Image 1 (cartoon, rainbow, N blue to C red):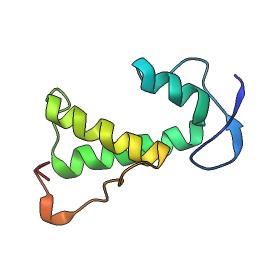
Image 2 (image 1 turned 30 degrees about the horizontal axis):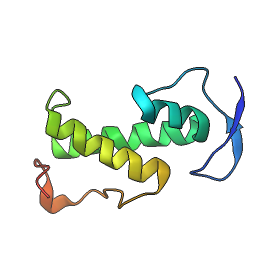
Image 3 (image 1 turned 90 degrees about the horizontal axis):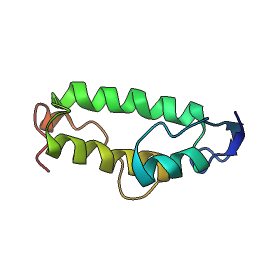
Image 4 (image 1 turned 135 degrees about the horizontal axis):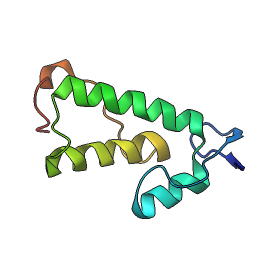
Length: 92
C-alpha cells in the first residue's frame, strides 16, 4: 500500500490498495484520503445512520450520507453534526 498525502488531515499516512467506495468519489478517496480519516468517516456514518434511523436502501438516505461524506472527507459544504431536534428524520 502506498502512502497518501491526506487532504483531510494534512498528513502523509497509509492509503488504500483499491477504492473503498465506488465510482469517481472512490477514485478521489484513493488518491486523497488516508485510512485513518476513512475510519473516522465510517464512525461518523454509523452515528448518522443510527441517530436518524436511516434505511441505507432508501435513495434519499444514501444521498444524505454521500453529501455528508463529501463534506467530512473533502471539507466542502457543511458536515452534518447530529442535530437532536431532527432525530428519526432526514428532512432538512
